[in-house]
Length: 589
Image 1 (cartoon, helix red, strand yellow):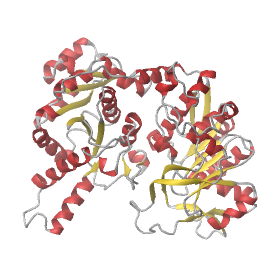
Image 2 (image 1 turned 180 degrees about the vertical axis):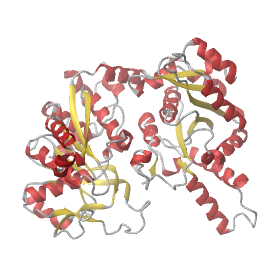
Image 3 (image 1 turned 30 degrees about the horizontal axis):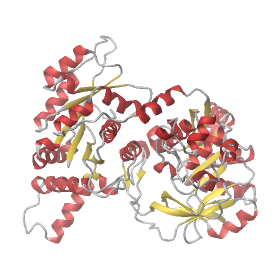
Image 4 (image 1 turned 90 degrees about the horizontal axis):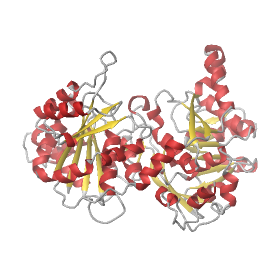
């Protein structure tokens, strides 16, 4: 097993996750099997209880693991399926060591950071690296490890020491360290400054880790003089200094690494003999297509955490995947749900007016998942506007529950209809707490992970978009569900629940017949969306919002089950492709 460690210096938020994912893509394109591990030094056991405002979205895996959003980057870039153990946290490590100490596994020894914590970290990495994540038996060839945070953070010290020891455990020919750093330009001077990177590398060396490659983040391409200075003072060969400058879209990053021969430097360090050229044609096509999109489609996202785009990162990526498949340029307008509510008309009149103006000019409306009652009334107003004005609507998790509450209030006439999450005494509870979920323990107690949804009919929009007749598998993260006692009344009034769980009592998908596109899903389809393989319901939203749904469905794609998943973008771009699915439809546009 070969290991590539990615660390970061100077400041956080440099894009270590994208860099680590892109390294994996290039190595994968050279024919290697790649897996990934993310180390988060915080004390939380997992990301499940962390605020999206503080740490971005919580990404959910097939096994129900609630993990850092960077694992979403790994899955999207590498098209792999990770497990909860691929995300290591300080909380998990200490919990594991303390449990072993309580069992007496250490035979009375004094349990210390070194060697017990550091050994646990190393054992964990080696164990997880051997687990196949690409659907093929056997271990991967390379494990890309990303160490979260910034070198010098006090909470990272046990991991730094463990990784220092790890390079000797696995052997120097099996270990490559890529350090991501910042090369800023001061506005007054206008010169690319190398001192921050020099200090960062010096600090990393003081801990016993020497970078073999530098991945330098900058606004503009690095000048040759800057590279030579970095090489001189950081003791890294100039051809091992990779520049990841700002690009128009992140799909250019693997191409940057390829063009700078980063894969060759990594192959040489890992003592890998043959170095085939990376097969990144589909990535180059995707990046170019994204740059050249010109026909806009306006999607309004009505949410609670609109102040931080990372709170909805997977939703944003799923929209982008669908837009590229539909040859449309995504124009995403963020609307804070509270700005749509009546009280905002008095408290924030300008924001209220602007929010409604954005909603009224939208081609499509999306209400994502969330927790808590803040902004709920605004989301209900958005769902009502989309339903009554025949604007394409997609509700995810809470967004589906919102659609049910809105329908009950305005179609069934149940003015006090609500979710018990927001009004436990509601006389008409449309959404209720799931009986098997803990009401006292918050972390890891929701209905989590990949679960089967049985399609009730093949003659529905969702079945046609998924190109499946019987069932689909999607990832879940919720505590509340549509009240099964209300389903009959809702369906009698016109709402259809076309997807249910295996018991038949838990509603998974709703549709409104006669509406251009009014779909709610209890699951989170964004977590399985991939570049070139967009999520079906996101694809449906963009198709409907851009006026292409009829041509897509009438072209036979909605009724054909021969191609259960859309083709990869590489297949779609191939002139020799015989696929009768999405690629052929795109050719007709």
